[in-house]
Length: 450
Image (cartoon, rainbow, N blue to C red):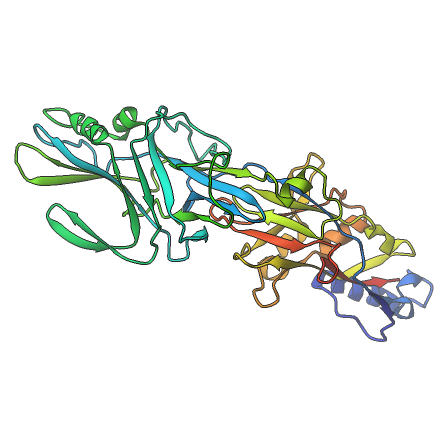
């Protein structure tokens, strides 16, 4: 729709545009009409609206994303009917709960258990009723990076011993508490999963701190065990998961409940235990994989679906949408304009699974990198991006960015629509493209022409 209307009084402008408007009104009041900037006379100022600018969308594989030392860690595999297969695994250090660990004389293993706390009752994506199989491996190398200087990324991996320390097939229960017996006491703990590992592995740990041996510090312990790799038993290339089965679960690995506990006896004869920590001091990172074979995503990535009425955004470093507005500068073909308001509205098509809670709209550099739009710095309430569950939309305000493009202050390389919290969630959004027959992408622009 295109419309044009002449207003006799001041239009409602954003604060920065209002400053310009007031400035020009003051100038006009100080001079006779036509003596200074006659094009800004009130009778020449008109307000226009358009929502028909073409928006070209393409989807791209997202860049690898930093996943080290975040708030939650993802684990699982899911077969999405639209996005195909996605899996999450993670690597982690195990650290001491205190220095100079000693297990006494002749310590003998009873069992060794890896515990991982669920994030919350909603900390999953997919079909949580699907049984999940996971394996735990021992790393063959340490996590060596100083994470304050260089992160680990979602496409990176570490070497590990191919023989699992332990495996478990279970249906994740994020709701019920767990009764834990330790050192003769029974406690009720928050929902978590417990995986029994190899007794041989547990005895090796005990031997390092028994009969006069002491595990002095974390460095000594990490030289012994290196760390753990926790992963789904199947991969995105060999899984037999049916469509819409499986899930990715979010774990609070930094919780005090997330531990590696050895249960043992020594010469004293009583049952004892020692819990190694997987806390914020432990280096760790997620590894993500995707397989889009035989999906609409695959067709678009390979340029085989030019007329799609849908576009896509996916967390876990999946896919993003690139947007280009090829005819934007046509607005200024007949004279100078000021963008008073510009709302970019995306309508969600598929809500069978919860869409991404918040998207980010980013500018693109000459090298294809991402940068914040100038409107982002106006604050989240103005800029937007949060999912509106009632309207089933995402809305962004990008007036300043469009003004910069029209004024040639910024080179137009397009924009990226990406998932926020991509490293700690598995959600995805299916969005109507500009070619959708009804609720397509809308760019509602109100502008002043003079």
